[in-house]
Length: 118
Length: 115
Image (cartoon, chains in turn orange, brown):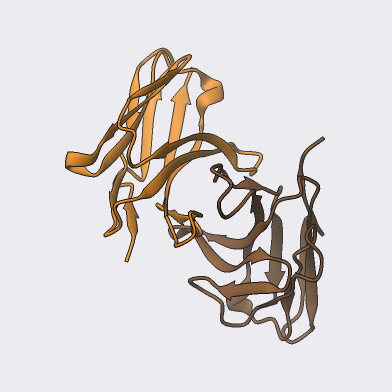
């Protein structure tokens, strides 16, 4: 069975600090998809990134970067020069491929509450 | 605007009174899904649908029903709600099987309280 672990329940940093959110996953499939979602205080879920299991390239998008390492089953998320607006709950999620080429539902981690203090 | 809508956004009801939470998407997505979010548990999948008339159980289906008569709509039905179904519910959709794009787009959430 698939599982996603976000060991950090809550992280608090001061604005402008860099912060890394950890995500460790378990799956028996060789083809799977990893995601990060952001849930700001307003409650909606905002898609941030999707990564395929066969693409281990790291990704950078502005102040956000993601480090995918299959050897350690990790998909960590780093925010550089954090800002107060980054305060949110961040979820890592995993989806396994199903026959026919599609993907199954998302298995979420329990989330990391990130607090950026001014 | 491409979106997933849910109604109502907030609902307080009593034990045993049947209710339906509607979900609609305007992106012609094949795949739709319902999740519930509870403190300390993250989000868990309730039911999903690969296409019209095709539904299947997720991780926590007990006490819920769904239907998919049209591609755009995927209502969540609680026939006899109980207090342990008090939660924040999210509907999601994606292009689905074989599309090559698996991002799930989420509705704004429905906060349900069962007393």
